Length: 160
Image 1 (cartoon, rainbow, N blue to C red):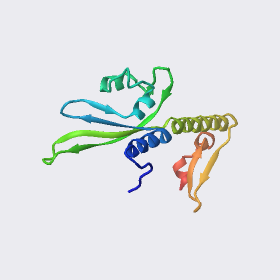
Image 2: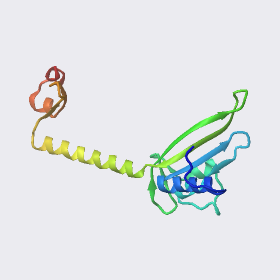
Image 3: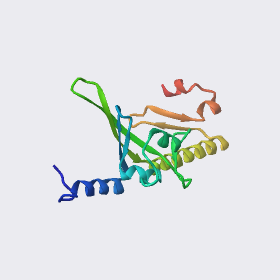
Image 4: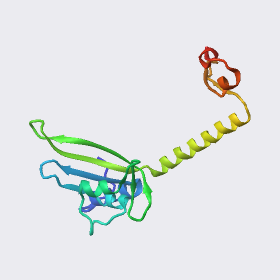
C-alpha cells in the first residue's frame, strides 16, 4: 500500500496533501443518525469554516445555485464533481453514504471558452456565407456547417 507520509499523523497528512493538491474533499452521511461529516477539504472548497458551520444537507444546498454550481459566501462560483457510493450492513441495508468532491471549475471554464469559440466560428461562417464540411480519414463526411442553408441540398444526401 502506498503511504505518502509516515508516523502516527501520516494518514491525516496524506489526506490533507491529496485534498489541497487535488482540489478535493471527502464527505459522509450516516443514514441512521442523518449526520453529515465533511473533511477540511470540503469546507475549503465551499469557502466556509468548520469553526462556524456544521455539516448538513441544508447548509450544502444553501450554497448550490439553480444552474448547478456552488456560490461561495465570498461570491465566487465553483463547479464541483461528486462521486459516491452507499455502504450496506451484513443484511444489505444501506447504512452510510460516502463520497468525494472535486473542484472542476477550471475544466468547466475551458469547456465554456471552447463553446464560445465554436459559436463565434459558426457566426463567422454564416456571415461570410461560407460552407464548411469535415471528413474522416476514410473520406466520409462527418459534419457540415451552413451547407444546407447555402446549397439547399440535404446534408444526409451530401453525407452519403
